[in-house]
Image (tube, rainbow, N blue to C red; front, side, top):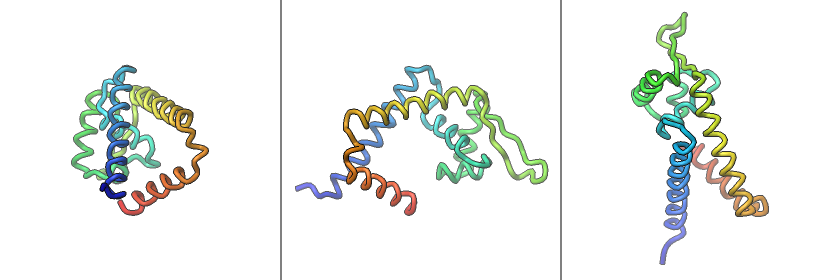
Length: 145
């Protein structure tokens, strides 16, 4: 017999992988020429109140070295600009270029469509227990990690 822990693990992993896969294919079909990792770096830059290398790395839960590798590629592709603080040269700020804003519009549209579809097809708004459970899972991961 399969334990509830195994079922939940398999479901979470499966849903996560399915969303990433569908997201990648859909964005490619809509003309986005970036990897999902690069798109998520752009999203993290946009979502940081003060987008420094440090704050973006922290949001993504990656090292500065890992983020530097991604940012170097995005700068080369002309999606991101970076500049140093005039008063503290150690602090590096990131800025999204117009091409990045366009990619994020496509990315946001995908997420909006996905959520509308999930609500329509599964009638989730009627399932308060499921919504509360998903909220609890999300809170758990935010607090734990």
